[in-house]
Length: 170
Image (cartoon, rainbow, N blue to C red; front, side, top):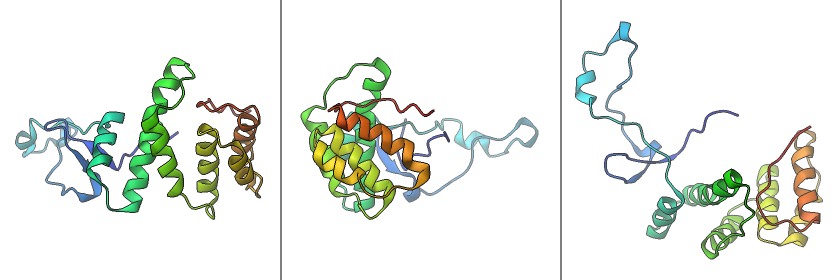
C-alpha cells in the first residue's frame, strides 16, 4: 500500500484541523546536508502535521462542512478512525451511536453508479447490519480485479458479521 496522503491534517502547534489544498506553502524545512537551505533557520520550529483522531474529526464535522466532497472525506476518515482500534485490538466491538450516525450519513454521499463507491457502500451497510441492502449492491456486475474484495464482503454479509474484518487475499 502507498503511504497515506491526508487531505485534512492537524497542526501540531495549535491543534487546528486544516485542509492541505487550502494552505499556502511558505518554504521547506528539509534539505539534504549537501544542499542546506540558507533560510532553514526561519522554520526551525516547524513540525509536520499529524493525523487527526476520531474526536478531532467529530469536532470538525460538528462545526460544519459545507463542501460535499470534504464532508465525504471526513465521514470516511471517521469510519476508518473508529475501526482502527478494533483492527489493532482484534475486538469485535459494535459501532457506537455516533459512528452509526456517521456511517449512515456517509452511505448517503456515495454514488452507486461508481463501482468503488458501490462496494464501499455495501461494506458500510454490512457494518450497519443492513445485510439485504448490502447483498443487493454486491449482486451487481463487478470488475475482475475486485472479485476477491466482493467475495470477502459477501461472505461476511452472509454470515451476519457486522464488525470490521481483515481482508486476506489469496
